[in-house]
Image (cartoon, rainbow, N blue to C red):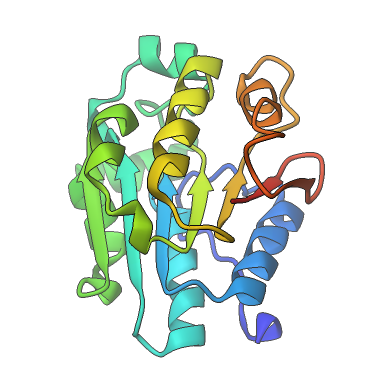
Length: 213
């Protein structure tokens, strides 16, 4: 079924735009584990989210749930700098700027815009606007099968996100963390500290690391 799926960019920003190889590794893991209840921390403009929903729909024929957490349009440069996240308030491509900012007057980072991108799966998704530290305690983690963690990248944020996820997630579930290879980020340190508290930590490639609870 992996051959039936192609990662699409939907004319939006995505950290996978120049790294489709890593995107394919993530979706190979989704294919292997076939989660029915998926959590993504760090939705950004919704490109990976839309692809995840398309993939889950292929596997489960509309019988899946997707949860996505992000601060959406409330992002700012100070927070982006601290958390090493993509700049939310700038479209560098002049064609995209003309289409979205001038013609449609749309903020691609907004909750409204992401909901519109995901409207095909409106009955399957739930988007949460806010900091992960505020939202994660309210997620029924015992029902989540698979987590893609790509929100804030500071050590403190990643460590806290992992703590809140692992606190109630069931055994033998999967957490994939992005940007494990970025030396200026806190992902690697936060993940490596879990070595004695989880079943397995496995590098899928330099960028992606898989935690089995």
